[in-house]
Image (cartoon, rainbow, N blue to C red; front, side):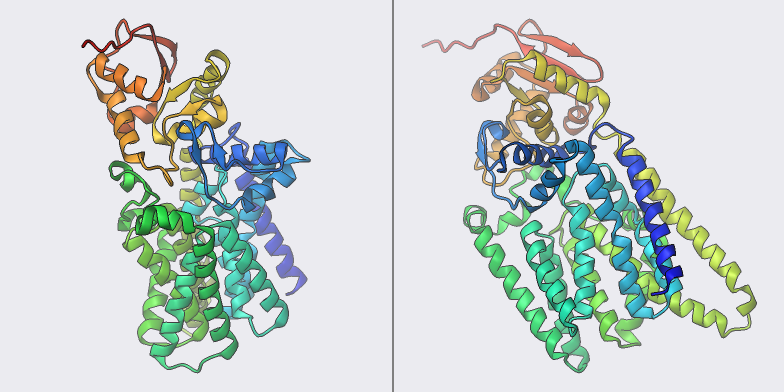
Length: 497
């Protein structure tokens, strides 16, 4: 790699990182409820050295099963920096590092530095990945880049340093996030493609692929055996109540996919899949296509969170875009319009700015407002003005905010695993927001020993209610801005025999 190429790659990294840090630090904290689950775990590890597996606040008392590798990583940096600053800085640096790994993959596929640099820049602005990781605290910020480094290591598996790198990354990613199962599915599809196309088998590649499949499946069976026994196959859908399952495992629409990925990598990436499915053969392209097929299959079957699936699918299509771009340059150079090559290049770059960079920025701006300053103020009010043992009624996408910011118990949150009564709890919370009679609401509040109702814009949208119909003498509005907080006052149910 020439010094000029390295310099350009560093500039691209700086541009992507600067854009990320601008949005990340434009808000005081994070923009999703789930971010606060991770923040709470990181703070607990920093303070005690241990994650929270037995949580007295979530679901008013529950057990977690998860791997805390991500949380320990951020907690290490939080020893030297403020925790929110460390979390934003580290996750965005690692997310921006994706451009280096995409450059390496694109360079190996095309042997063209210009194409690889263009692809690296484009990978930094895949709208769904940029927007959903820039202001959120999520392991995906780290897992996605490492998975593509894993792909590159697999492409160089004959070299011992890359073999050791591959094995190390495989273990780390297996411990860090279940998204590694998508990688394993891609390997399975790749093996099938090689057999179907009757290509010569690479012994090292064959052995490492089979090892990876069996290792990951075995590791997850050991790590999450309790979840498998408790939920059975339904563990895939994380025990989410049916009423809100579509918000987590949503169906992908074509227009939504195009907007989240970018029209150019989507269309041109699919063209390369078609080209190599019917007209050309190439082992390395088949490997990339296999991961696209794995992500596409899981999205189609709704077995993966929509945004996470689109992140992986979109970045794979960006890699395939590199192959199209390489062919396009070669075709123009050999045609009668070769004098217009730079004009075509300019049009392509303009298209990338309009259809990838701009949507990334627009989506990031929109996502940054997901948790408003008014909501954080309301949560801080709860922290300062309610008893320590207070139980707060809130929607599932606000439960982690209640436990992390307000530091109070919730009735439910977005982590439903190992909860026998998750469906019933959601139904009860829904009735609390939608009921018309005070007596019904008081009965439900008694069931969970709850005294406060947190009524935000999120709850209004989820339960389709602009106000609580039953509020009367039994409830007092104790906080009123964009968020309302209601406290139960004095009313008791008496059973008359």
